[in-house]
Image 1 (tube, rainbow, N blue to C red):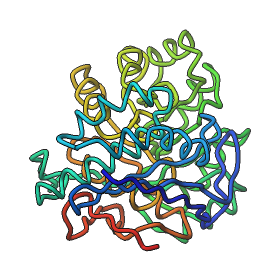
Image 2 (cartoon, rainbow, N blue to C red):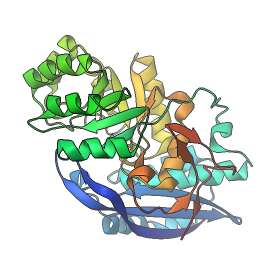
Image 3 (tube, rainbow, N blue to C red):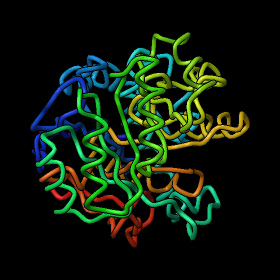
Image 4 (cartoon, rainbow, N blue to C red):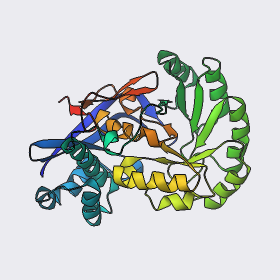
Length: 337
């Protein structure tokens, strides 16, 4: 296979702020794999929390360029299994390669990716739209500027309940809350009572991933479902979330791509947990791949292209939460530049 790497730095529409940090630009890496004149695209995002930068991602992939370019793709699962020993310390890089392999494979089959899996897309969940931490006034303005059926609200301030109360005055939309590890046990339990009354559907990762004892107390006493994010990075983490969370948020970039995500979905459902996929602010390349998993999901947060002022590709479209697939085989993504 031929390998090509395309680094990008895309501006956000607004400064993107969560409990840990703020940023105005999202660095991304798009990977292209080509075999017998057919190419597939994959994507991964840089992320300071996981110490991943685009130069490091490119370096990790370049180290294995000879192996990749001498590889003959048969199935994406086999490719992932062969690449895993080489990139097991860099799931972000493996993700980009895996998504590209699935895009390529589906094109070889002359099918859209969800058709390869035999999935029915008629009842796909709607995606939420994220409102990052800001002043209450600015958060209201962002909400009003982008009418949407489901909002994911980033929290982790001293005014969290006041923020949701004010936002609720301006919309009847479903709210989801993501505290990004910012709360403690009592704060989580107390906030959940108020948030439930304000129409919040669930709370994502309220506490630090290391606080398993505290999370157990929360799980046993909370009035809202809790969804794991930082506590569920790779597929081995699914089992560790049973009895601590009501569901998991799978991020392709963190777990190593579509191949392990499919196994994580199966494991979580077998354990009776809800399944969500999340965004790492990917552009339309990565988000188009996530779209093909929708029939398997309960919730989805794939608003990356909506949060960015620029894009890498044409692919899926979003219309009031509904995902519209591109009329192309594979994931449907094609580079714009």
